[in-house]
Image (cartoon, rainbow, N blue to C red; front, side):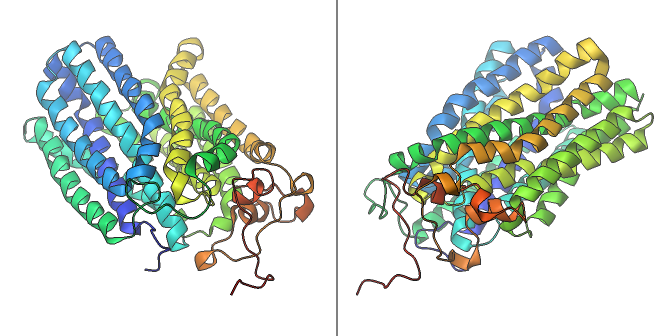
Length: 456
């Protein structure tokens, strides 16, 4: 596999996402047992779960710069830490205070690991010159499904609640060793202590140049995550309350959603990045359509079909956004850039289930699902103009685009934006990514051109 100097191996991203998904699959399937072990009511459990977000957000804000400095040895350490914290929570969660404290630590470890594995996927995609991010998210979704089912089987034979967490911790340790070996096997990451700095602009300066685009993309990602987590969190409740499904059929809701997300991400991983804008808009429209079908279903089969359609649409949204916006971010600032975007997007992940609860109380669950479809529709309408507004137009910019083909034939993010709306005049195309910054920010150097003689 061809890599740019200092590039991240693809297997680093895939291993990281697989362990991350396995952890959350175990957690989701273990919540009832942990609630019983801690002796909590539903309201107390809801209060304790808030501490996951409270721990995750500050960790996500700071993890990116740490990854930029220390490289993916830190990613390996964070995955091992996440596995260990999961075991600790399963052991010590005996009441509300102990569970809340444990979930704050779990949220911090998970938030930092989330940023690290996404930064690894972005770096691997840039280095390999082929799509990696969407497929890496597919490994996450597939691991969630497998780990959830395995945890259910272990619960069926009365295994202690700590057992599946211990198995994930062992898997995290193995993946950590592999990722650490990969990190040692490549040239030192830019900005790491003792490492030679990457030629070109400093990470902080580059991050400032990309910040408006990252914030806008993060807001779009928040809409995508709100739709995704609304379905993942409420689909079983919808099946049980509105369609009178028995517990087995009700549980099929989130299982179908996660399985379709995984399959879609693996399939979409083969798409060239030049189709990113089209994928985003069609994905949002598909999610909105599937959610409307779910809200109008009168029996379980059409409801599952609508849920599967919504899953196929939401599956591509955040991974495609992340790949599009960070395509040209140099590795010296990739962790920090990923941190900004994922932290803003994570707010939508936290808000999605709350949004459904609010609408369900005032308009019923079908009305709440229609409100979720409105979020997906808003994303479809806002994606193109929002990204266009976040960066200067070619006609308004002093930027001179690079004509150098990227490594592996991978199109620049400007070409992605233009190609996603085939037929747009070149003068009207938004300049997304590095090309937008050239001439606007002196700290981002202008790339060399093929028609200029190389220095001897």
